[in-house]
Amino acid sequence: MTTVLEKESLSTKQKILAFTLTLLTFVMGTSEFVIVGLLTEVSSDLNISLAVAGTLVSGFAIAYAIGTPLLTAFVSRFPKYPLMLILISLFIVGNVISALSGSYELLVFSRIITAVVSGVLVALSMSIASEIMPVSKKSAIIALVFAGFTISNVIGVPVGTLIGQLGSWQLTFWFTALLGVISLAISIFILPKNLQVQKGSVKEQLGLLANPRIILAFFIPTFSIAGTYTIYTYITPIMEEGLGIPTRYISIILLAYGAFSILSNVLAGKIASRDGVSKLRYVFLIQAVILGSLYFTMESTYAGLISLMLMAVMIYAMNATIQLYLMNLAELYFPAAKDFASSLTPVAVNIGIALGATIGGYVVANESLIQLSWVGGLCALIASGLAVVSYRMDKKEESFSGSEVYEG
Figure 1 (spheres, one colour):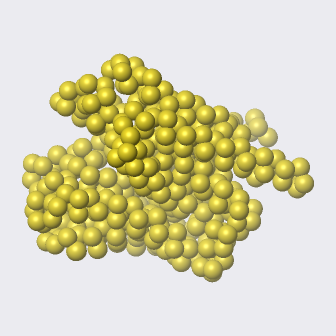
Figure 2: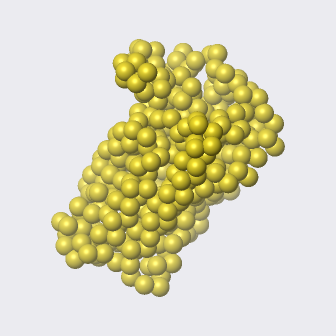
Figure 3: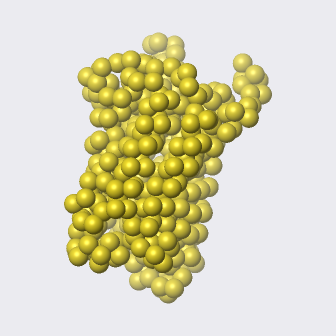
């Protein structure tokens, strides 16, 4: 059986579909993160403080985290092809409203629409990738689809920010709306039209969240991402004040950080394809060591930069494994909630970002920048502990049932 799987290859149609799904996450990521580089322009134009403008970032994350699972549970009973096209159209509308916004309130409203729609689109993209791709390629394709977010930070966000700075922040949202139109045009022809629909009530799907195995698996990526974002949220002052790097070089280093984080998605695919759940505990231990190493390397510019780049390599290493794991758990316990389960990893990541930023803010307010390192490492250790417990529960269940929970 293994030999047959190893020989499986992607058809041309599957390769184009993988590109289309990755393009979708790239567009969603660009729309989500580009606002970070435009907060000064938005606050000035709308006559609001920088702190209030910052709520456009946190508000997006909160809307994503709350709205995505609820809307996914409601719409997953409908055929995926027309549903995807409708959601992409709503994404375009959300960005057009953002571009036309002349008030803070309207901009918040448009960002909430964009956030919730983006979350459901990402969940459905993961579900489609899992359903269509060969088993032996599934983990690599899931990692590739996730990579769209990373690539958006390296390419889409800098381009969108530049457009906003040279023109206006409204022009940036016309740019993201245009990306949405391109995605819609491609999706009309490429997305499969006869995908299986698992019909289940909203109550049945939300019941997934009452399952201890799902809850445990959900918090694994939450704490892993929180560990990274405890440090990453303050990466600019760390580089300027801790590593003594001149401000003019910060953007170049951040670009390098983004490039290294792309490698993280490649690593994620390789881990997931080789019994990834059994390796997660070690992945998070390595992450904890890397995050903690900044405590010792912050006195050296070059050693500190190595710690930061290794941090980038580890940031998404667990994504593909966790995504497949949650969907497999759902298929085992709640088959009708597989699409809903596919929304949980992106939601966990957004909660992890918010948690990490909050923890980091508390540490910086009460301690010093260097203390962020061991606190971030501690979060990664918690993720490792949760992964150990989850893995042992899998093995215990396998010994009773004789079936594997995770198949990469």
